[in-house]
Length: 181
Image (cartoon, rainbow, N blue to C red; front, side, top):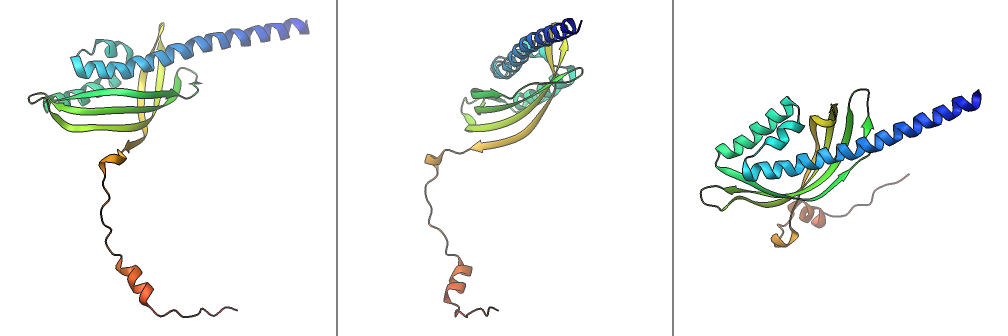
C-alpha cells in the first residue's frame, strides 16, 4: 500500500513537471512574440498579433505609447540584441518571469526619414505576469525594473579637466601632524 502511494506521488510529480516544462516553452514563446511584435507594430502599424496576446489594459497602454510617437510623426526602428529569461514562478492562477533585454532603437521622423533620436542601446530588466487563457498565455502586467543606456565609448572624446580648486587649496595648505593617543 505504501509503495502504491509513493509511486502515485512520483508519477504526479513527473506529470506536473512535464506540464510545467511545456508551459515554460509557451510562456517564453509569448514573451518573444510580444517583444518582436512591438518591432513589427512600430514598422507596419499592425497590432493584430499583440491584441490577442495581451490583456485589454496592457494592450491599451501599449497603443497609447505607440500612438503618442505616431502623432508626433515619429516611428521607432528597433532590434533586439539579446533577451534572457529567469526561471518562471508559477502562482495559484498566473505565472511571473523576469527578463534581461538588450535593445538598440532609434526614432525616425516620418516626413524627413532622418533620425529624430539617434540609435541608442539600452538594457532593460523587466517583470512580466502572464495568465493562462484557454491554451495561450496572455501578458496581464508588465513592470520596468531597471533601465540603463549603454553609451558608445568611441563617441566621447576626452575633454580637458577643470582644475579642482578644493584640491589645490588642500595641497597648498600647511600640513600639521595629528595628535594621537
